[in-house]
Image (cartoon, rainbow, N blue to C red; front, side, top):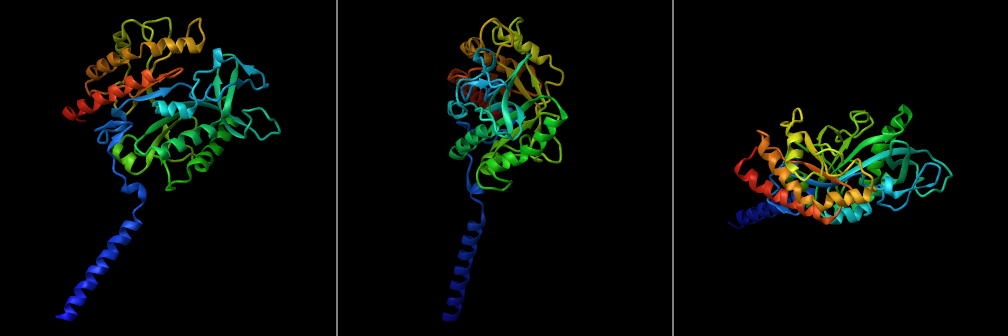
Length: 350
């Protein structure tokens, strides 16, 4: 009997050790439970293309203060700066979609503020280009914020590069993956990572696996063997944003904007994100003045959201709202939209 009891105790102790060993082997990222996403409770079961992200246009242009022409001369903020908050300040405000146009800088002895070898953030105008700071600086701010805030997910896009030459494209292809690895570490590193499952799995997968960033790349760079396989092609529906027609933030009838969105060919393809440009491309004022005009009427976005949700037979939402000189009212509207999305998809799940 005593021999049997010792054997039983031995098995029990061995089982306890096995359980402890298995728990030890489980990565910390897998042990995290999703309870909310971007501050919205109940959103863990939704997918990325069922929620809305507040975004900043050309997020790094103006975020580091003065911008410069290639010659070193100061570029006027009135025409080139689209933001006046740092990347960290935008994140703390609630911005969760970032937009970067970039160029490439070669190694040099130059000492201009933007001169760091590798990809650099740029504002590409019709007649000139203004340079901000290294893309690396923005990525570090994003990494540090996300590692401190485990319930947040965001997207980044690199839509344009300058100049559009094969040489610059090849330099960017060669340096993009090493740049992201240098900031976030290679795949399976500790800390936040890119995700491949932006459309296939719920947001809880992104949160619990710590794969909380979605990166969209210009089609010239996506799919190349030098680019991380987790990167997504920049394919999206976009709204009009001209100052001189009815289909922008300036209109007094936001349903007109929704009507134009609903006319977009293929708008019911819900896995392709819908981006609403809540900024003005034309006008006599500075970008900051026109940006303030759009922020002042951010509440109208809710009408656009409602019309698009009811007007598409698959009930798809707006996915990203992009603005100049972002402010809290934009974020507050987006939070309301996401709370409505949680309630809507409870009764009408995809």
